[in-house]
Length: 463
View 1 (cartoon, rainbow, N blue to C red):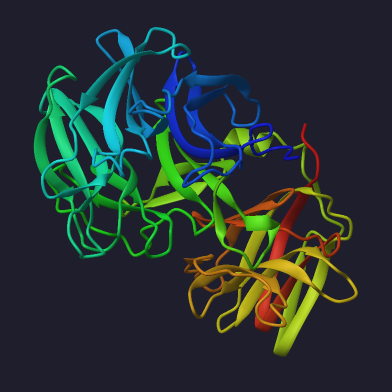
View 2: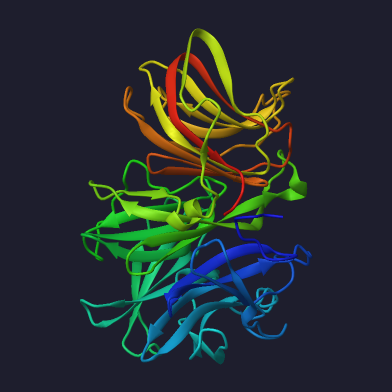
């Protein structure tokens, strides 16, 4: 049972449609009961939890209810919630897995209205069906915003082109003045890089527009592009993601002061490190910030940091480690427990091969999970240590680009909640899922070089 990160009772958290209203975040989401029937398990609507701090959640159950097995919205796939004309609207994807065999579009956009964000009135009206030239069975996840400059509503959604070409995913656009009649604007972004664009998101921060999408044909992660105009061009920063493979379908929302990213950390089938990733998992929230060059970084929300009891200094809060040939390591905490908050500063010497933070380590065998920093390769990755006999953990996509200037202090933070581990350093985040418990030690290692860790502080309970 998770103590910090949110997971529904007897279900797993799926795609999130966040909106901030009435002083709190409304997190609409899908729930997977892991009761398999063909394709996606049991049909679902949108469930709802509300929160003000991403630590305490009020569960409202299923808010936007699904239709029957013969209805277009047998399943309610992703969409977005927004305010317009004094009401709240949910633009969503109605999906019926039986319609494919009946030669009907299986995915169609639909709309519902609410006064209180809890109870929704569905219209059963079918909007903007798949356009000619696009795959009728991959047309989903609408996101709607008011375009102040053009004084109309802009809607983007994920699609893919018809035909045999595999990498034909695109984000398409529509515009409307009344939320009923939509004019097709064609492709907003069609880079020929991914099979499908899922969960598109669009927001402005400072001088830039940011276009987000989640892909599942390259590294299965949420990526973004940036532009000073909605007309593009959309350019990619060097690091075009927010997290790794184990953080999926992230959408953002702002409270007017801060912007947050809501994604989920998937489980692995059978809780097996070697197995494939499942759909659905545990909610993790990042706070998004803008760097001087316009690129985006993430960090833990302040409310999540403050949720922990006041961190205390570790037994050795300042550690200097060096090994000119091979590996050396030191223990940080002998009995870490299964709820961990660790923070500190890291200074890496030039030429150092690697620095690792090890979780759930067995003090006898040395087996553990680790976040491994490779300064020369400019990479941060997650793996099982040792991954022997190869392989013990399928960590494809479990890495991030990371540049650490030698001799400079870099703040890092580690949060562990049962089987979920989140590591932050210099605006870069990496989430992971751990399915075994080798031991209870938290330690650090350095290979071929030197590093200094100071101001090390640790907490293992919530305040």
